[in-house]
Every structure is written in C-alpha cells, then in structure tokens.
Image (cartoon, rainbow, N blue to C red; front, side, top):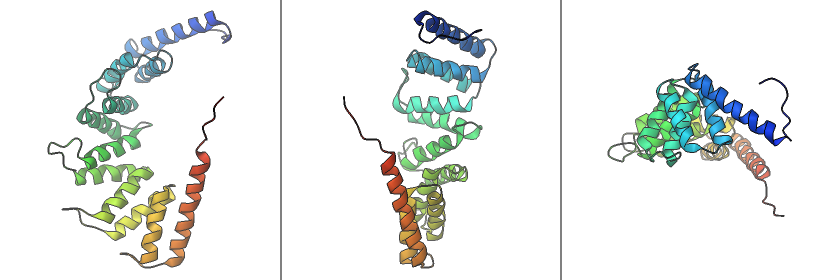
Length: 231
C-alpha cells in the first residue's frame, strides 16, 4: 500500500483496513506464511472483533503450521470457550504443550500452563494432580525465568505430598530464584525460611534483606495499580 494514510479521513482508513485484511489473508493461505496467519488473527481480533473467525485461523495455524504463538493463543481460547470453541481443558493443555515445545514469544508461559493444568488435576483422567508432570513443566518455565513457575515449584517442595516429599533446600532455591525475578510472595517465604532456619541454615540478616525486598515489591505493585476515575 503506497503513500501515507490520513487517519482523519474515514474513507482512507476503511480502504487501508480492507487492504490489510486482504494482504494478511493472502500471506496466510496463499503464501503459507505462519506469521501472516498470526497477523490475520490480530486483525480479526483487534479490528473486526470476530473471535469465531480468529479461532478458525488459530486452529489452522497451530495444527497445520505448528506456529507456537498461535498454539498458545488457541489454548487460551479453549480454556475459556472463546471464539465459538467448546471449553476443553485437555485440548487446551495439548495446545499449550505444542507451544511449549516450539520456540515462540509465549513458549515459557505455555510450559507454565501445562504444569498448572497438570498440578490442578484438570486434565487427568482421575481428576488427581500429576505432580511429576507439573514439576517437569514448571521447571522448564522456571529455567526460562518465569517467576510464577519458580514460585509454584518452591511451594510444591515446601508443602510436599504423597509420593512427592518435602525438600526445604529446593523450596528455598526456587523461592530465591522467584524472588530475584520479582515475585513478592517468594521473597516473603524465603525470608521466613532463613529467619526460622527451617531446613536451611538460619540467617537473620539475610531474612531481613529478603523481607525488605518483599516490602519494596509490594510498594511497587501498589504504585502500578491505577485508581478508577469517573467523569
């Protein structure tokens, strides 16, 4: 599309958007460009608010092109039943797994979601948590510096479960990593462990540093919450 678009001109904007749709559609289905398909999804969601059609493109791009970010977003659609898709956590987990195993912008979050669904027992035939699978995929996401996965690992080792013994050393290790990544509750947990010497060497000075880190993160979170205004 040559030339600049005057976004104050309704006809020019309409023509620009129509050309954008045609271009993305062509890239996706004729040029077989997975990124073009994903741009088409962005257009369908953001401009047309056509989530049913977006779901069809995501399904195509995930299943046919193995596009990681499309698989991640398709998984999110299945979690909530968006875009005319029936809510299905098992299918969502499979989509997240595909996204986890192939590099993409959302690969790490996808690994976390696989772990989370296994941890909750939402995708297991007996409805019971699969702690081994949860641990494996949390670990993969934590290795990718995803703080919630590191925190969930620390909680698993802190609490223990049948067939999954407590390990305070690992609980502290993952709490510290999550804390370093900015997870407030991980800092608080690590502080308590060092203060009590619970399974690790007692270190009140380190406990105080971690407590202050948790407080600072809490303050930062409070500042980032924008108050509602009316009028």
